[in-house]
Image 1 (tube, helix red, strand yellow):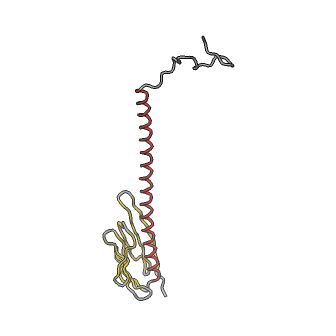
Image 2 (cartoon, helix red, strand yellow):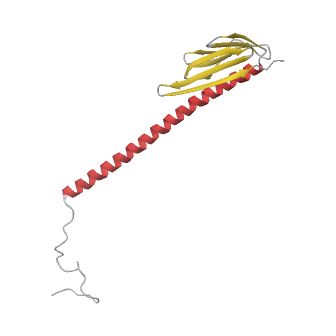
Length: 162
């Protein structure tokens, strides 16, 4: 005898339910494999994004270090009493208070030495060049970077005379 409800025959509620088989082992393994590939692809994207973010942070740090170092040099040059030694990679001047100020690069670090005491100003320096264009007018170029990134800053600075 057939099963009937108030509204008529309801499929799937017959005795025996012979059409419902479930999932096979092959179907489950295929679903797991597809899910694994999707998770691996998303993990690769996240890892790539994290690496890109780290590269941007490193580049920003290198640029900021170079900018701060160059600004310190500009400030000292503008306010110094006299320029003592201007070479391609070394600058020595007399500060406004009479102290000796020196800028030089050693082992990839730009140092500012005041009266013999040196402090690091910028790191990952690849080059520092200076030359006098005119008396009391210097052209300064500072290049920083690492293997895949390079930042070059150039400026001309006029010493303020009395």
